[in-house]
Image (tube, one colour):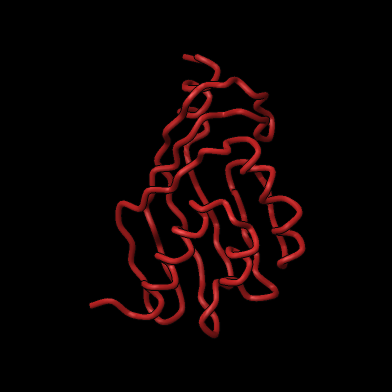
Length: 136
């Protein structure tokens, strides 16, 4: 059975795939905290998100998040996705290569008053480096 938080999570992923930062921001609480744990990047509040998140779009302008599975309740969520694209710009610590990538990731987060309150993304840097840099 689908609940309103399932719909909010689905809308977040669809909106992120549209690469429209303003639409993504509309789904977030004012004091949202978005964290890319692997890169060590923390985006605090809508202003912090707006300053940093576009760099990920620049790094992979064709990126796509493909949800595989998720669970939600009235306060939190967990989602498994595939993050794929072509690296056209720099990721933190990874200069642009022009190469495609596809990595599995998971995210955990919270809802508050019909908005995304927080999200933490976890993924495998070793796999990304293999795909982008050809490292063993």
